[in-house]
Image 1 (spheres, rainbow, N blue to C red):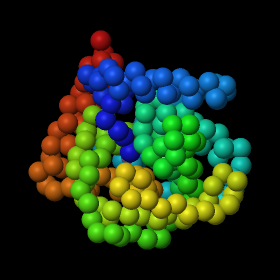
Image 2: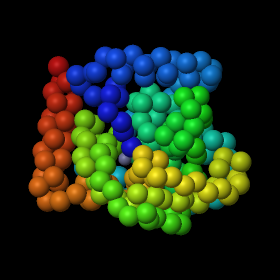
Image 3: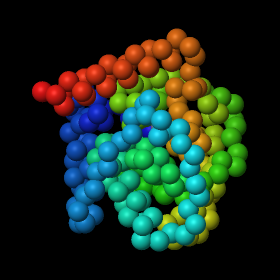
Length: 211
Ligand SMILES: [Zn+2]
């Protein structure tokens, strides 16, 4: 899930970006390995709708993928990221540590083979962004609360639950692993607006690449 004020946003809101850059640089110093920022698959790329599969074993391959997802998420100041958004079909997503209820220095929560075990406490409308929809922010109605069961990088099962932004991020990221996107959760009119914005985005990307 994307947050307003991320480097994807143009024009950049300078105060927010400065804060985010500092935060990112501070975090970057904690991870001395070579950063790998992966390309994000953007709507309407059909890869976002592909079937995902369970991780059988947390091996070096998975650990590297999680590290790259984390680097990519931080570099884009996202609240969360799913593996399918970088073209990988393993059932994995990450949520920023602060969004998950920690402080600025909390590491991201890693969810491997996650299942939503409960949602509720009524529904709430909130704004969502998504790395696969750069510069698009849209109101989405969802259950206020969600509980997810998953495996961590150590291969242990854990449960995470949250309201508001965390609850929303859990549902948004889990949706990615079932091929569902935020555009699927809005009405006809908003769908068309999003499609138009994404068409414009891809045209701009093509023009930039050509110049
Ligand atoms: Zn998303």
